[in-house]
Each structure stands twice: as C-alpha cells, then as structure tokens.
Image 1 (cartoon, rainbow, N blue to C red):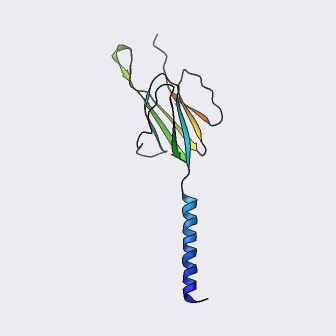
Image 2 (cartoon, one colour; image 1 turned 60 degrees about the horizontal axis):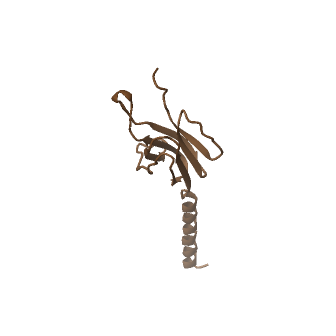
Length: 137
C-alpha cells in the first residue's frame, strides 16, 4: 500500500471515530406533558439541569386545566413552577412556587396540583405540589 493510500485510510478512520463520538454524545430529548390541575394560573415554568445557577427562559405558562408539551434534554432536571400572584385575606399577597427534581429518561407527564387535591399517579406521571395551608381558625 502506498503512502497516499495509507494517509487516506488514516484520515477516513479519524472521521469514522469522530462520527461515532458525536453520535454517542448527542443528547436525546424527551416530551414532557405539563398539566395544570390547580385553580390558579401558572405564570412561568422553568426546566433546567439540577444544580444550574441559571434557570434559563420560562418554558411557558398554563391556565387552570390547561396542558402544554415541551421537549426537554434527557438527564437530571429540576422543574420550577411559579403561580400567579394571589390576594389573601388582610391585604397580603402570595405567589406560590412548586419544585420537583426528576431523572428524565422517557416521555413523562407532570401534573401541577395543590396539596389539598388528590390526583391519580400512574406510571409515567409525576405530581408537582403547590403547598396550601389550611385557613387560620
């Protein structure tokens, strides 16, 4: 085999190895269906890698009873939902937040609900809870 042919084969081998590395390291994305079962609007939903210093851009908002599908990179992620501000008794205001850490490896449904609501969790479904305190007595 001549020198030129050997150089050609080495170059092709490098491209093959590089192609395999890129194919193996490319990230997969999964569909996450988000459902709002609360009586309030969710203004922002953030999905970001666990431990990230920035939450990034919001993935959307959800009216009560609404759903949205988003594509999320596989791996360990944190979900943060920020509800619309509510007026409480005595002139106070409150903006509820709910968080959930999960390992995303397959399509998933996230159901945002209040702690006083019962939901049916089934395989592929995870509840994300907004804590609701009982009214003062």
